[in-house]
Image (cartoon, rainbow, N blue to C red; front, side, top):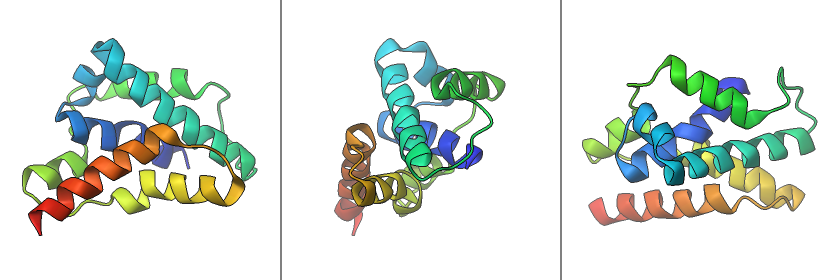
Length: 123
């Protein structure tokens, strides 16, 4: 679940803004989106009784991101080549699990909506 949470935090935001991890973390606005995606995933996971090895999701994903600053998530790479991404299995899964538990996931949902719309435009 840890790697999935980092994917949730970085994959969709990096894709929407077309930036690597370092650029996402340097900008206060995009860093806020990354942080909120992580918090939502953490909240959904905790509600599902997932046992995490950390208690502060924001600190965890920022530390993780600093280890790979130039990373460009596969979702971003897919979009550069106009390929359908795994959005439904990453951020979309957080949203679906959140709905089942009535846990709000607005940051993840907006990113899912943007990415799905872009992908529909290619078809």
